[in-house]
Length: 156
Image 1 (tube, rainbow, N blue to C red):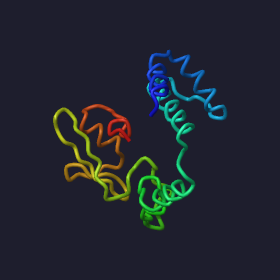
Image 2: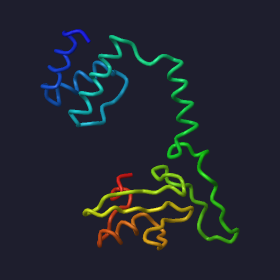
Image 3: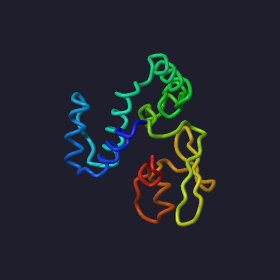
Image 4: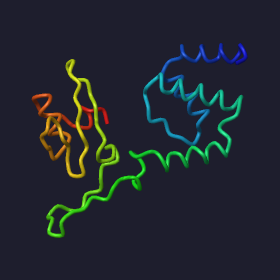
């Protein structure tokens, strides 16, 4: 990378949040700023500067990346999720799995107070210490001893 760009990048790091927002608006006129995180904005701006100078991903690379996401990303690809089978007399409406959860059979791992916690995702709940829980929040509350939002507790 030429020295002038390196100095520009380092200069950007010293700018205030408001200055970074103004630069972001210049570089991304269509996109609305949704972050007040200086490091995030700095990364986005630096990436755009490098993209402008060296070029972005080729169209072939973008197509290949989208194919890989569609084929191998079980969290975001609903087609890889097994269909849940419910009895016809079930009073519970057919639930669409939350996209934040990995596919059934996956293990969610968290280190909590020096202990390694492992929770298995099931079709209709979660398994922790050989006990079945209906919600991830119930598991988090069991572990933490008070009410927790399961998604926040496990960082999903």
